[in-house]
Figure 1: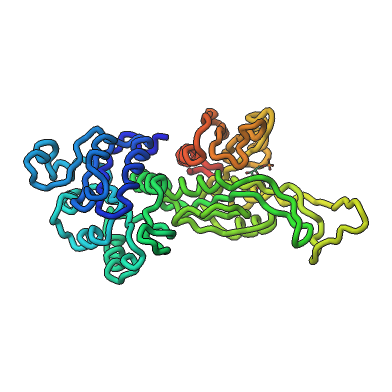
Figure 2: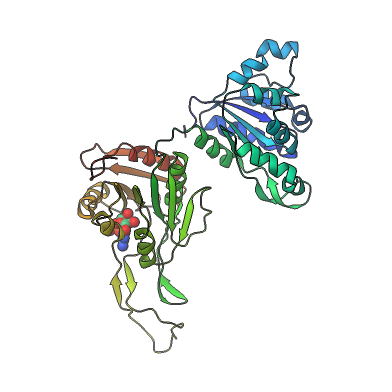
Length: 403
Ligand code: C5P
């Protein structure tokens, strides 16, 4: 994945037990394409040796201000000018407090003050310290500051034995947040509605027709659109995923629910990644149906075609994008579907074979749009595919003229 390719990131490590996770964070940022340097507070060096980061980055680790040998390698002002982004991970209560008031009494805080780069703070500390009004005030002050971003701490078991909020989020979450800070806001001011997951069509309260969609592709598209600055609404069938941060999530069950919620919202771009059930029972029993009486053939009727209805409606969004899950003649069938449903683009998805897109963490797709060359995206993690899909969206011309 090259979300962060060509980006220079300074990871500033402060002195909390979560400092050990910063080593994995450095690796993950490098894997995402970034060049990484590390600065540490005095406290951080007691948890992890600077040598660890030096070995990972291939660069000396800055720990001291005005140390003749370090200033010789890269001076603190040069260090402040070097990065495209500073990630403070973990950010202790102490570092947050100093940064909030502009105190500069060590290398990390001096670099923060001397730098014009955006800063992503990743707070991690004991729950009580996090809850303290002083820390909350400092967090609020930093949030309100220009070019300053925060990753919410996770809840769970903390190193001090307590359970609560204050854990450093896992490195991939921080990498995504860093990518979001550095992404150009190509979808700023746009409202993007994404549908995801399966629908459930109930025969009775205990039984339904559904499909194996995990919702991962749609959730990844919602996160990618959010990272490009869009206002995102996710209309989601039943899945076991957390909605991406900052995305409005509207949970639904059936195709009829999904249609109602999609049609109730006006948006500039709609991406229907949901695997909507094609049939629904003609009637739904109020109580669980008894098995007595042997075989049973339920009567089914077609569900409403949500995307075709939207593409033909007077309130048509500027871009209406569908998905086509096929097991043979994938691109050909997808192109026919795009025309028949009146879409501005379609993502052709091969769901046959063992590498099926359903429930998988990766996907391989072809992007089709009228009058445009097909874009073949080889197998990659769904978030990487989602980033490419969202980039492609910004190049499309909607049927009502503009994109
Ligand atoms: O017709 P088919 O189900 O293959 O079309 C797939 C596309 O149409 C997907 O974008 C899916 O979300 C959408 N769809 C829909 N309403 C349905 C069935 C599919 O919006 N009832």
